[in-house]
Amino acid sequence: MFPKRFAPALFGLILSGLMSLLVSGISTYRAAGFGDHYLALWIGAWLTAWLIAFPVVLVAAPLARRTVSRLVESGP
Image (cartoon, rainbow, N blue to C red; front, side, top):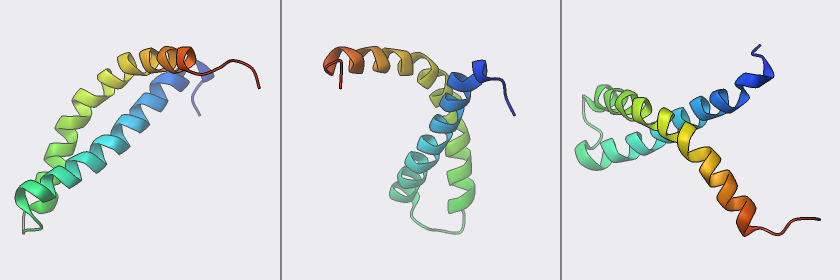
């Protein structure tokens, strides 16, 4: 288990991993189709995307939270 203070970073790691996995899989399929090398291409694209997505999520998530809090009404 991780200490609670790591929750934002762990959330960003998991979210960026899942989203980059999904998007790179779709993009790889559209670019190369389901061929013999699809899985290797997908994993390579995913790892590259995840390396970029994780730090971006760490920066963008607080900005998105602040934007959402300004757009929604407070209270019940």
